[in-house]
Image (cartoon, rainbow, N blue to C red; front, side):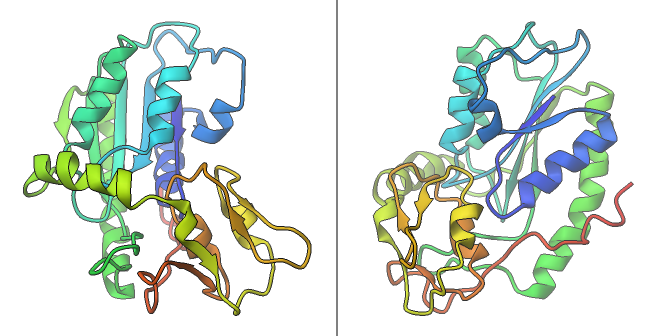
Length: 259
């Protein structure tokens, strides 16, 4: 049983690829949080979480899912896969703590490098097309390896923390969470054609649009930037930080060669 959260499609692709290779079921985190019933976990079924790294930490919705998730049995094998553009900091440590609060032992942890999607700070932008393709090509082999180890019930750590992981998660990540995650800085420029793509794209239903009006953002924002990246007119901005920045969505057809 795999639960995922995804803004631009990277983590959803990873989750669905793993589900196919591990003969498993897959649910979105938002779908799971919206259901009140107990999820039936098979006796030998693994419990997995797949999610992007935000501010060198797991998304708040994944932590909330772990807190609220109702299972029919205590999981015997728990793993998570965090997708990242470069490194993860101490994301894995925060996940282990979240799981421990449910008395779920983390058995395996993995990181997977995917194309960058964060654009809301100076110096941060999407990857070039060439670099994004290299990352996607490498990710396919990495997913096969992760799936093999999950099927073998491998136990261990395989997350790339990068340089200065404590600083990134506990100092920069703290500032990111408390100072740089306000949805109030989102706006639609005059290029907006009021198509509603941003409304449909938001996994938390945080973007609303009245007839013949520009979109407005509520308070329940994950900073996944799905609205920004899905806009066909590149009309969504986050303050002045996203001006002249690129857009990225997981490319359709990239999974065609998956086994």
